[in-house]
Image (cartoon, rainbow, N blue to C red):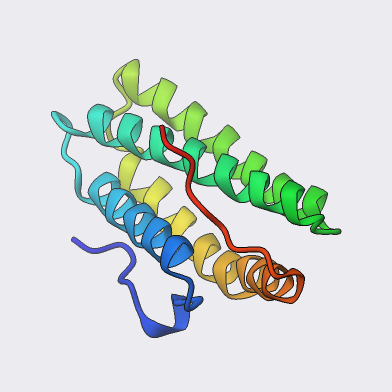
Amino acid sequence: MTTLAWSPTLALNDVVMDHTHEEFIELLNAVGAAGPDTIEAAMRAFVEHTEQHFAEEERWMTESGFPPLGCHQNQHNMVMQVAREVCARVAKGETTLGAPFAQAVAEWFGDHVTVMDAILKQYMDMQGYTPVMQAA
């Protein structure tokens, strides 16, 4: 089951950002498709990736001087709070939470990328800042 498909509307025409977003979608789809035996590992992988993904974007915002960092960061924090809570509940046996969680995040993500991340990309371009992933 695909919760969210990569599409040209999600592309920001930045290799680093687009690659990270494609990975995010792949892991989100794994959560949405996971069964009771695989949901815990899928949620852990999603949370780990998303923590790194958001931390990188927030580093780029800080380094480029992005003015609405707080607003963007608040959205990240909201998603991470829910993801960590779902992950903890799944670990305690609530294995049916994956699909509804994935669907809710998919609905949020489309708007987040096309508005918040697009603005960030445009700002970084104006500043001459090129996002680079740090080694893990």
